[in-house]
Amino acid sequence: MGAGTFSTEPTVVVWNEGVHEARNQPATIGTTYPRGIHGAIAEFLAGYFPGSDITTATLADPEHGLTEERLAGTDVLVWWGHIAHGEVSDDVVDRVHRHVLAGMGLVVLHSGHFSKILTRLLGTTCSLKWRNDGERELVWTVKPSHPIAAGIESPIVIPEQEMYGELFDIPEPDDLIFISSFEGGEVFRSGVTFSRGKGRIFYFSPGDQEYPVYHHPQIQRVLANGVDWVARPGSVRSAPGVENPARDWFLGD
Image (cartoon, rainbow, N blue to C red):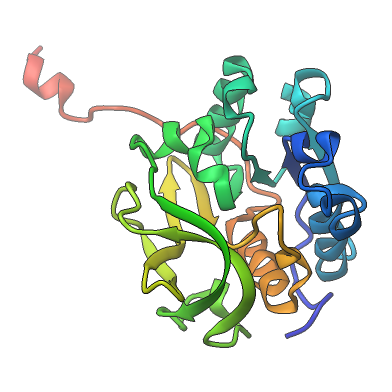
């Protein structure tokens, strides 16, 4: 399956805090991602979903570009953050949280593991070990039957990348799809899924701002698969119902 072959046409917003791009840190980011990390991701996703509305938003936008109206029309929110997690408005986090529980898909990338939205949804610190020595990363598929692993080589070879290592403080995932290994011997659960309410979540770690990881064809395919899997285009967005059928029996007449 190649670009442009998915049957779904989800509405996607690619969110990036945009701080590294604004500060030109590292100095190579402007040449590696001339349209920003969000622009690069949106561009290759458009190749996989040519009939979809794929747009971008950043921290500096009013309401971070994530208004109630925009989220209501979004099937999948892709989230990349790094050094400005604390600057994300709690009101916006509340809004995104509500939409995920009601059925919006969420794809969280790389250092977005520390984002307010993911730590709130998972209920853990999402802390991990890390080291940035530009090491080779091997991304191994450990659940090839999962749709997110469709068409993916094992391992994906990333020549240079920031090391993320265990212990990764997350709950037991619904699916463990990818495990990464690094030159220093560390391993990391680099591709996992969760469900919260009616929403699906996919976390995928490869993609530091210093390296051209999002230009890697196999990484692009993983993210396109992830967007396709978490998307529920056409579904009715509603909060999960809460009821207790035994209540009347317990209380009596």
